[in-house]
Length: 135
Image (cartoon, rainbow, N blue to C red; front, side):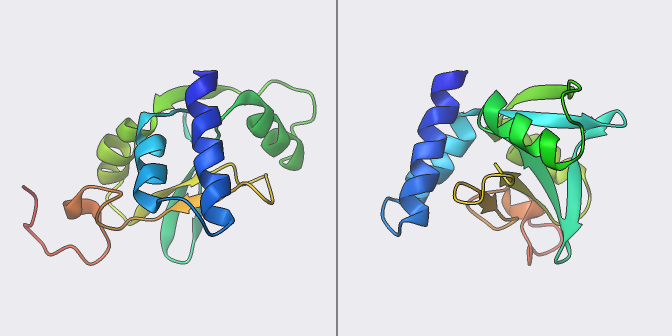
């Protein structure tokens, strides 16, 4: 689990530096096991810009950084370990609204947003998808 998150964090760093292949980064996100905090029985998410963002983290250190910023202090934060592909292929479409995945949002230089666009989420869940375009 740790290794996949590390590779994703490396791909994110490359893209933030203006290098690397964005398709490789999306591929790593899909292969990575991401840690998603549980909030009130559901996955932790936030709304911004008309999009529901599922908050996910590449490792426990990034999750702990988020917990500290949320005021959880040293109390444990429950989380689910989910494959990135499951988040974008199953969870996002089930939400019934534009949704994407925000990775490592408490890491100023390491965060990345995977928006609800074709190539990241299923076409039918992508922003601008036509009604009935599900394959």
